[in-house]
Length: 208
Ligand code: VGL
Ligand code: ZN
Image (cartoon, rainbow, N blue to C red; front, top):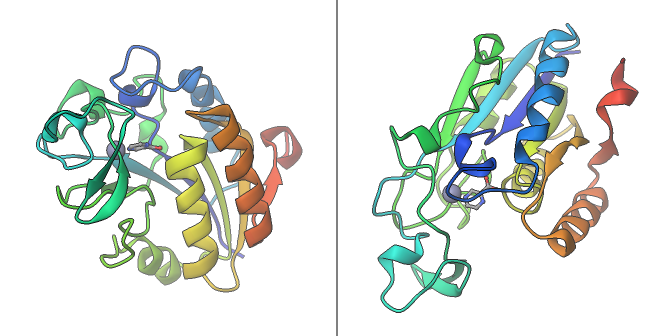
């Protein structure tokens, strides 16, 4: 049994003061640090949203679009986001209190300006893989706990892809270690994950 913890996008950009802040996003940091220090995980991985400054998910790249409008990217419906997590900016750095020394592997994503990548495993069009599934398979991961930001986007699509791309592995969502963008979206996301076979749990139920 090899247990891995996957921390999704715990970056300044998604915390209060960031460019795409999630309410209480910083509150997931102590949860992540507690889990990393628990000794219950063999492997700790973190994803990092890592966009070029001209990324096509940014409203700024589309004439007449404002952040949070719906638009299109490469012919697919796309939420127009504020510019966020631009490569090498403070906004893209992990939250300063995250215990990054405990992270074994960082999976960057969202580098192709023509497609968004909510999932840490593959782009939204499901064409290009990040390589994370193969990396976890090579390590023999049989249990994957997922938490981070944002519940209704990157956490959701990462957990759904984990179920799809790591056949036989048990995937769990650490719900108290997540915060979302839209309350209704969060509810729907948790239901979609549950339906797909993700176990919804809480950090307090895994040994604290
Ligand atoms: C995310 C929107 C755009 C996320 C990333 O981390 O959930 N959401 N880029
Ligand atoms: Zn992004």
